[in-house]
Structure formats: structure tokens, C-alpha cells
Length: 254
Ligand code: SF4
Image 1 (cartoon, rainbow, N blue to C red):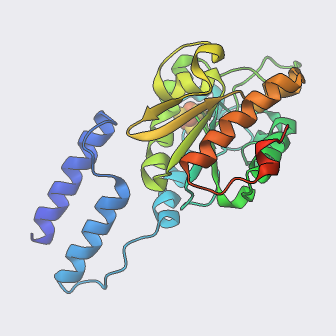
Image 2 (spheres, rainbow, N blue to C red):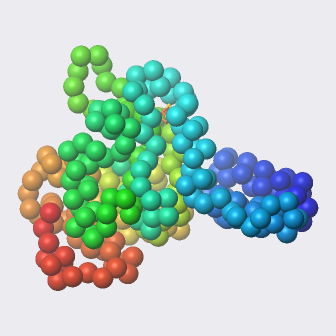
Image 3 (spheres, protein in one colour):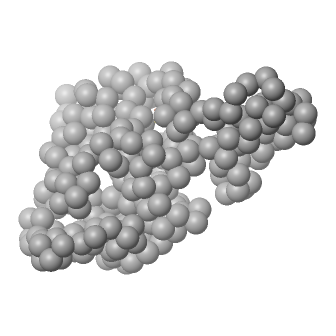
């Protein structure tokens, strides 16, 4: 295939993908590799496909300048793109940055984030091994003079979701974990109670998806039974990832 023809094919595929994130099935990473291979065959470039970090970088830049939600663009301190290993096999998805995340530019750094980090460590991962992102990249605004965070609206999530879709396409994790019902609604467009959703496997574009409670819920509800539910969900994730599970981990309570 000649380079101009390849460019046309890639442009057409990307247009289809942007209009409908379920099709075509070629991921950004696959397209980038294809392009690098053809360029190499044409003798115009060595065979060095961009790595996943390089593929994420331009999306991060687009997010940084995004004003699709003008009310959030003018109240945010900064955008919160995502953090972690672009080659992660495990990706956590939350709903939106809160006040701490807005300040620091990193998802899950407040009290709920510290609990998520504890969960990740108990799974025998470092925080840097996994990838963490939210549906929304800007903090949902709150009335002046008020404290706390608010949940993102369905329209805000719909507007921002394409960025997350691109992140998932590039990272291609083996397992996704959605934290809380709002994240599930943002990702799948499905509303449900956590009682109905959690503890069993779902799928997002062919990727196994575990739904569990948001760590903020566990901070509000300290009952050991609720914490154990989240840990049992994480044990299922470890099994799906074919990671060794120790006896201590099996009996663990958060
Ligand atoms: S929430 Fe997302 S879509 Fe809305 S302004 Fe921020 S980055 Fe853009």
C-alpha cells in the first residue's frame, strides 16, 4: 500500500472511530504500528512505532486546552488527564477530579485516592504499575463559597468520555475496574445500583470490566462487610490477570 493510500485509510478509520467508538475494531496503537511498518517498508522511516506514552501525549495536550464544557474550563485549576503506566494491564476508572485532584493535577490523590493506593498495594501492584483515569478530566464546579465535590452530570460525562475512550484504546488494559455507579454510567451509559452491578464481570469493548464501590463510599461506610466486598472484587481481578494470590491476600480485609 502506498503512503498516500495508507493515510486515506487511516484517516477514514479514525473518522469512523470518532463517530462511533465501537467501530472500527482497529485500535490507535494498531494503526500507529501499521503506519510505522508501511513507512519502514517504503524506506522513509525506520520501524519504530510510537510507544503508548507517545500516543497518549497529544491527547493529554488536547485535554489541557479543552473548553468543551465552558463552565468547567473556567473554574478548573487544571485538567486531570490520568496517571500511571501506559502499558498497564490494569486500569482503574473513577468519575471526576475532586478538589485535591484539581489542585495537584493527578487523579485519586485525596483521602479516597489514598485508600485506592492502599487497595492497589494490597493487590501487590505499585500505583505506578497501573493506570488511573476519570471519566471527566475537569473538576465539576460547585457554587462559590461551598465546600466538597459534586458528581458529574450525564451531559458532562458524555462530552468528556471520548478522551477516556482514546486512553483505553491506547493502553489496551487486560482488565478495567470501574469505581462506583457514576463511573459505570459514564463508561457504559448504564444506570444501576451498585448492588446490581458490582461483584461480577461486565465488558467494555471486549475488555473484562469489574465494577466495585468507589473508595469514597468505603470512607463513608466503614463496615468491614463493605470493605470485604471490594476486596473480593479485587481478588476476582487478580484471578483474571492470572496473578498469584497468597493465603494472606485471600483472607485480607481492607
Ligand atoms: S470536562 Fe472534559 S470535555 Fe469538559 S472541558 Fe474538561 S476536558 Fe473538556
